Image (tube, rainbow, N blue to C red; front, side):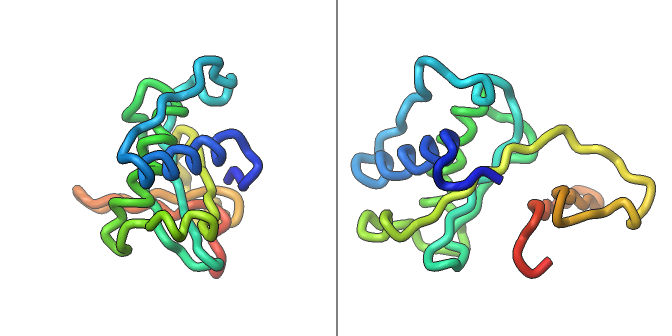
Length: 139
């Protein structure tokens, strides 16, 4: 998980702020950092006063690079999470943001290999799929 001072978090916050102000979608920086160039699933989580305020992500890449994935998912977390009303401009200063970049999933042999503090967990049953991000409070 990337915290507030990380470039991916700054990109997410910039994307949210611009979208809420003008409904505009920012472009990724022209001089992409190496970690923004690849492709990966990305989750963006928003908290307000320590409480979840929005979380949207992708299991696998849907954009041409991680920067675009972050921008898209940040805007979605702020405006399209069905559990919450859209983030308002007046809330922006209170919103803390984290970004999780997913690695390729690996199968495990059994439950003894699970470590939810260190690794995320994907569970599938038929056509349904769920994800637990790593190191979630209370897990």
